[in-house]
Length: 403
Ligand code: AMP
Ligand code: MG
Image 1 (cartoon, rainbow, N blue to C red):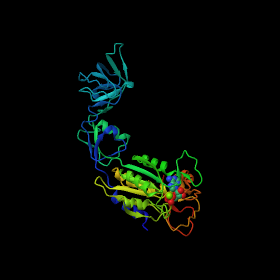
Image 2: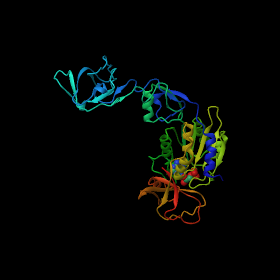
Image 3: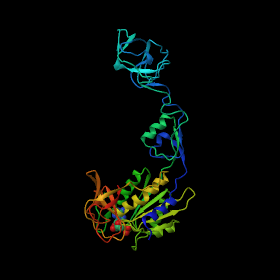
Image 4: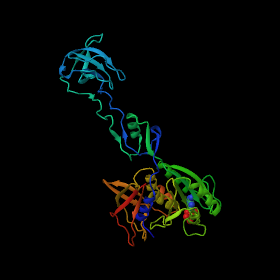
């Protein structure tokens, strides 16, 4: 049986970004840039005032000096008169600086001398050259690369794209992910389960996980453990970039998922990984001219499904979307209590991470196993316990995966 690292290596080989496409910048939030972005203008586009006040000749300024006011320029206006020694232009934040001015004195350091506002007195000892002015192009020059290919577009990047005139951008398409829950026992959340039935918790959880990655979730509902029905749903799921199934990959008589996938041209890359929970996890690909379809068969138990999504599906979705093939955020913490899982497999254990005296501590929760989703809901991390036949002691360094 392969280990987690080997499984990730194999997934990575098949998770390549799809061909890039031009989209409107307005629709680009959450996408990854496929090309560098250059600015079509200088920013700021003119020397601009950073304060409301007076544009002056710096060498004029000493306490009590009086300057005659030429005009008033607000943001959006353009000055019409050059400032020369003995004069000043009243200027507002963001407005272009008049020719000849090389400093702005903030309004709080000035007072009007006369009621018709023709003369201003300066109450400052001096002005530094360039004070309260942002020179043209100080932030961005025309032709500068402002964002590199590979950059995830967050709200800040949306602002930069707008500033630099990039209204159409080349991005990697976000993957579409079909989600199919399998099992005769599954009923919808609004149904009270009858004898032998349980509610489908994986479906909503996996859909939410997919949506949180920024990918498009395609809901395929519940498939019965029955060949024809599963085949029909699998064929539908293979129209998307990724198909994520839950259930039906273990060794039970009705665990039909691997054979149904094989019958539909999906090649197995691995089945079973040395971890807990999640050992039965299945991964395969369907060759396709548009880019290989990836298929993940997650174990039915909800905690196993969650762990396998975080470990295996998440990095694949990131890579398809043009981001790094990265795991969820990890850290190292000190074990807060004694812990004795005694497993021969690496165990991803629901736990709580907290800070005590400036040190990260992790406390495993009273988890009842892979069907116990409720306890997982109280966790904020998974603590990774390596195989061990002895207990872990308080203070041991433990790797944690943040949820
Ligand atoms: P399986 O992997 O199909 O053998 O399922 C393993 C266990 O997970 C069984 O107890 C199932 O009832 C349970 N299970 C399977 N699918 C789901 C689901 N969608 N939601 C909640 N539990 C499930
Ligand atoms: Mg099943």
